[in-house]
Amino acid sequence: MQQLNILVVDDEANIRKTLALFLQSRSHNVVTADNFRHALDETARSRFDLAFVDLRLGTQSGLDLLNSFSSLAPAMKVVVMTAYASIDTAVEAMKRGAADYIAKPFTPGQLELVTERLGALCAMERRIASLQDTIDQLNPEATFISNDHAMQQAIELARHVAPSEAVVLLRGPSGTGKSLLARSIHQWSRRSQKPFGTISCPSLSSELLESELFGHVKGAFTGALRDNPGRIATYDGGTLFLDEIGDLPLSIQPKLLRFIQDREYERVGDHQTRHADVRIITATNIDLDKSVASGSFREDLYYRLNVVQVNLPSLGERKNDIGIIAESTLAFFNARYHKTIHGFTGDVLRMFREYAWPGNIRELRNVIERAVILCDRDLVGRELLPDTMTGGKTSPGLGDPVPLDTIEELHIRRVLEQTKSLQEAAGILGIDQATLWRKRKQYRIE
Image 1 (tube, rainbow, N blue to C red):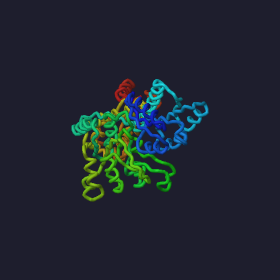
Image 2 (image 1 turned 90 degrees about the horizontal axis):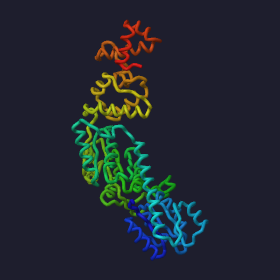
Image 3 (image 1 turned 90 degrees about the vertical axis):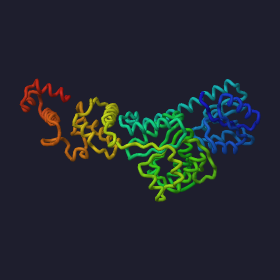
Image 4 (image 1 turned 180 degrees about the vertical axis):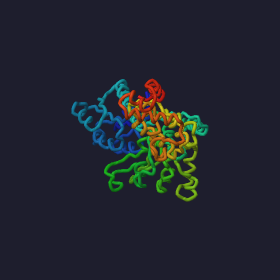
């Protein structure tokens, strides 16, 4: 059974002690609270998977805690305990968000059954969230198969550092797969069963970015209508990827530095110091050394982020990988769009190898997705490539520096599209039907 963080809330010392000892004997981490206020403070300070809450806490009701818990820790499962069991209290507890209800006195077996069931539910919810996030970000290049020496070195370094807790800085031009490598480092790490999240630093204003990262309390600023736990709290135990870290505002940089060093932070508008265990991975496509020199990036934060640096080469520097990536990307979009395209013409593969790819893998992916959507043949031909690659021409013509078979294939395709029978097409082409049939097979023309 997985290890859980459990909060026990009861005003009777013997019950708190007995529950804590039993749950600790099952390898769980247990924190106890003896009153309403103490329980709220502990919930604000730490992340709990499960809470056992007594229905009567002195003069206060444990049911009232449920409303506060739903705001402070919406993912936490709450089990209400009481010696005054009734159908009405059970129904009321469930209405307020309790996950289960257990009557005192209960046996160790009952307690263990409830804990195992809710622990499994917590694990399933985290797994579903992680899988959904993976599906949303799915890309065919995530396997990182490469024939390029520089890329192989980058992948080997990333795999080597993944099991550690080191902060990793990914450097490379935009579109080279930094976000995919960050996700892979998480999957290769000991945190793989915990959540992975991404924040794009340039996408939000300074105020919103701080709130998104560290969270805020209700009323902290205009529009803060409810508490926001923040990404750090949400991904406690997991990994947080900060993309384009070079655009992180100076006002937030010391707060991030403090969190990396001490694992401590405060939500916007709140003085309560919180703790979280989150691994940080960052990425940039700019020269951070220049940013440090210009004063736009803190030197101390740069050194904390640059513990392990992984450099990703541009796609233009990985000529030997373009064919591999193109084929895997084609297979991916074949499945997505329910196509059975067999590959690329020789002319297209040559163009892929000769093109500079300023947008790197992201641009290649977009080019192939567009081609798959438009293609109604067995092979992706030059006519399906964007003007940026063909120089404004949608297809090759006479005198273009292309092989003769490319011109022949295109001419046969166009004639077949404009005629109603093989006999008619063969007559226009000046060849017999048997030759035309062989040419169709050669060029995989349907």
